[in-house]
Image 1 (cartoon, rainbow, N blue to C red):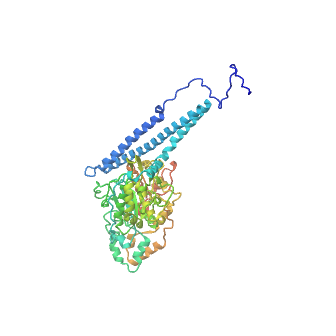
Image 2: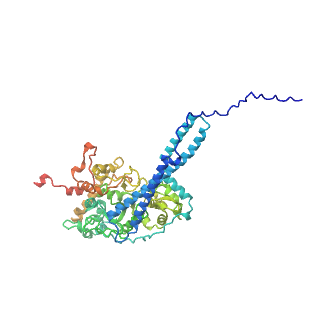
Image 3: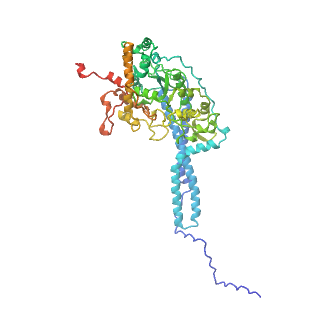
Length: 597
């Protein structure tokens, strides 16, 4: 008979050991945490949302007002510029607020999730461990909020582009494309044509007002009557060339003549073209820009395809002159960093365009949309460079003949809110169109891939626009530093360039045999032996309206000894400004005391 278990005594308690130690009961309930909707982070999100909405509505209202007033009641050029800048600032604020809103919302979400997990763990561990976990969660959330803003815009745009059905995305209609221009049989500059002198086309893309007219006038004036020695040698000394015809074509340069009707016509190194809003009908009589406004013009806005169309209009006009061999895009806030002889010699000596058409690590790939893909345009061709380019004539032709890539950019590359995607489309055509087009044609090897264009810009303050210089900063010292002397030996280039040019009056004012000897001597003893690297800037921006007087003073005193040094006690650099040609400075120099007696 099996034994039966003994009955348990009611007085004996069974001891059960817990698997984990129990958390100690807190001595007091402690402070109660505020609900999530009352936390400061959520309040900041709401404020950011309100700011983003106001900035976005303001920016779009400004742009809509500008675009709906193409007639006689358009604002003045200055008002248009101010309104455009206000709209740009509003859009920048909306983008920044949207990015901050996204990061803040993500931080709130992750904080809530992590806080819930930490709270669950705290029920199973000791009280001090729960406190440490909460502190770690708080630190992690704070770091995420600080770092997510930088990556939010790019990653969000890339994700939206990759996952959104193309049928749901907005498609802008293709806009008018100018036909390829008809090149003139000869240049209107008869003297340059007789010399077969290569010219540099200065393309001013402006809001209308070209505020630094006095500085550019002085700069072009210092190029008057100067000719490249080798070009003059071929025209004067080669058999079969009609020397008397050359003298007639360059009659304005012969001593005793009254000269050309304008400063631009009295020099033969540069052509000038101006694009302004359609409401600008012209420039006053006697202005440097009189008669140089291009025919085809569009109303431009920041970050829009209209900037590309305006640049193409400038190229379209300039390309018709067969002597224009280099094309440089400028704005009303730009000034040259070198005298005109160095500027011309440097550009014509370069064999590449100043556009970064190579693949590199800062191409903003998230701006690419798969909708932009065409028969020849693929994602692998996406490139980024500076807006202010320097193009060879061959590359200008590529731009003017293009229709396929331009249509893709017109329809799918812009910077604005896209309601269908409920996201910000972040694409700036002026930074991507030309370098991408050159890559499509396999011309990366013909572009200066270390360069971002011709202009030096200060991006140290961050944001969507470069830093603007203040009047008190405008000085030869600033010019010297912006040239980047650690990489660019501007003084050596300047000295070489002064020697490779000769004065037209001295050559054309004598008989052919004497003229040939002069230009042969100049050509044989000179060479542009120290060219600047193609990555060295040739212009600088941005010099706003309040710097006009300071910039004019900079160029007016460029030949004087006082311009060679500023306040050295303040750390200025004692160096010549080299903003005007040496020949001009010699002509402008006052006679010596012995000559006056």
